[in-house]
Image (tube, rainbow, N blue to C red):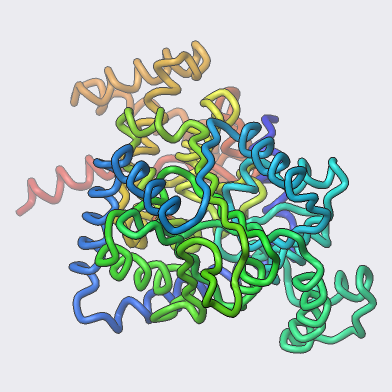
Length: 466
Ligand code: SF4
């Protein structure tokens, strides 16, 4: 069995995971639908957001240069990283330059992509995730399973046990008590940290401003309490104007958590000014490519419009059943099934484009109208063209295409298969096991014999009667 199928089998049998997924994704879907219903014209808002992202992607090189100029004008520094290894190297060099021993981190998918925590810890630097979910995942030695809710796979009961075992928290089933306990642990970490690292939700080119959204205030503390702030973003996070920000930020909150706006909307334009009471003394913006400019030049450029709201994950019937870890990398769900093969290369994630029923729930939920099912189909096409299917599969699909193009062959084939299945099923009316190569279908289900007369025959008789 291939690694993806194995992970899926394990996930489906995990009762605790199924409970957590059911609770988390249902809550996410309902919250988003409620929040979008409050807007006067949700379709127009989504379309505006889509145009904002298209404007940014169409002018990406120019906007990145404008962003750099303005960050520097604001007193910050801009560093560029071609790939994940270079990103880690750049941040390690900053740590060495500033003698950093302790780091607090706000939520950042890009640093998950580069496994920055491991790189820093390998050099003896203490890294503490400050987002509650990320911190719990870090304590558990796991990776996030959702773009927005990293611990969506964990129940509150499992979380309480973990905090009890790792930090000695008195056992409780009340989330607010767990939060209070972790908050007290974290406060000390912010005060001790030499550097705060954050992700970036949007980078506004016209003023060189970095925007992050959050609900816990942890990102604000991580970026303003330590003397050095390092913000890390993928190249696609840049947007042109504040008008675009105004549209995108409200859609991000509504789509991600069902809020009109997130509780904290942090806007950072460089380091602390002489007349400002707080904020970092030094500000760095590190901009990562890691294959994104390559994607921009392909028919998959649209995938870069993603604002990482997680709505497509919650809406996807596949994600709802298997959770994020089964996808095998940082980006799960429908958008992950596109982004992972594109960033990692098709051979590292060959099954992901098939992890979809193509029902379209992802596209319907997406605030920037990304045509996710179309891209999944194109990725499947690429895999076929690259020789992914077995020779048997190729021949089978060719025969299938011939039969479907000819009404006579289709009718005769239907009759033959119907007769065969009834013969093999006998009185039971169903087959327990299909012969290879179709036996995978009957591993966990029966195969009912075809009905007689067939639908086509009944339909023809009915039309004939009327
Ligand atoms: S593809 Fe759309 S719905 Fe999915 S995370 Fe990105 S913006 Fe959100």
